[in-house]
Length: 222
Length: 222
DNA sequence: AGTTTGCATACTACTGAGTATGTTGCAACA
DNA sequence: TGTTGCAACATACTCAGTAGTATGCAAACT
Image (cartoon, rainbow over all chains, first blue to last red; front, side, top):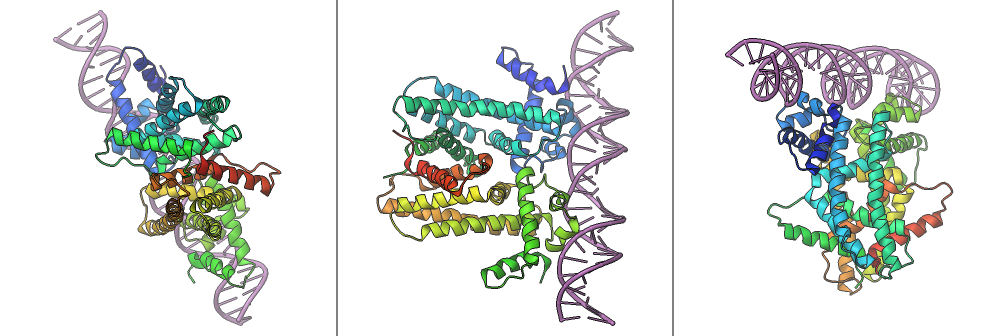
């Protein structure tokens, strides 16, 4: 097994029944610290030594599991996207009018952002990076893969939107792409300003996510 | 006059009647190229040599006008904020119901983003950087100043919102802060996906800005 | 004629990604 | 119970890129 496949291997494992329970811990710790560093200082602003210092370890440990800094970033990104995708997919399942479905999806999106700020801030950064000049072809390939997932993610919202227009719960005269980009932008922007307040309960978080979704669906007119 | 004051000096001059017309061009060229570089590759990812190469010049030219890379970034940011502030301030002037006023402001914001993508993408990046660990105290001071302007900017929207709630044109039961952050997030996110299409007319741009503002105000319910 | 402006050239000092090479502990044979 | 092998790191090093500086130099200004 190639080094850089270890984490993905682990991801597959935990989907099944077994857990090695040791290697896992170590890799997750690295990912968590990396997510925090990338969130606080950006990709270029974070050095591998920064991540290592935060881990209370040295570069050796990181390069033992990840081939490069870019690889590390992508794995954090991938994990963030996975959490988002899972949450939104689940919110889609109980069918209903498109408008309500879309709102549930938005709410799930917002809540996931709030509960995984570090990982999701990296995801947002990755979307930024997409337009940035590619470095190596290998990196470009990884980035393209992630953007393809991102595209599917956005498509889920577009589909729900169209369904809502079809069933009359959403105005038919709207530029779907623009509307979806607006809604997702509002939610993604949370990575900038939202930080969990100490002692904030999950109920409070859910309430905020709900209000955010409501605003994007219903507007503000009195 | 200190080196790093040259551009600000210039900004003040153009506010008056006179223009030297030579130094100005050179500095503006640098700012334009810097804005493009920072937008495409990020602050940390851009080297001074990159900006110089894009200028068809060398470092010497840049360091002749700017004390440091950070200084250059801040000046681009400052210019971007100035354009935003000007546009939104003007949109505020014709008074009216809060809802319409807020919508005009949002539209002006969106349009300015579209017409100054490079500069405004740097502004958005700067907001990101705010939470990032400060480097030198001097940089921290500049950044704090810019964030104070940013705060005033956001406050303009908050005020308009409250006015709308007072005059009944906006629902009174809304968390103002959350709503404003959502709206501004939707517009700021444009720096990610919007790129002017070749041959796109100002009318088309205005139409898109208008639709974006409309969505944030009126929602999507059918 | 001397000074300043507006750059270019050449150099320094340092950071930081990636690598090569230990070192240690556990585990599975033999 | 040695001992062999490998995983999981730590240590030490290389080397390319880069922010910033020192200096040169022609043209413009005074």
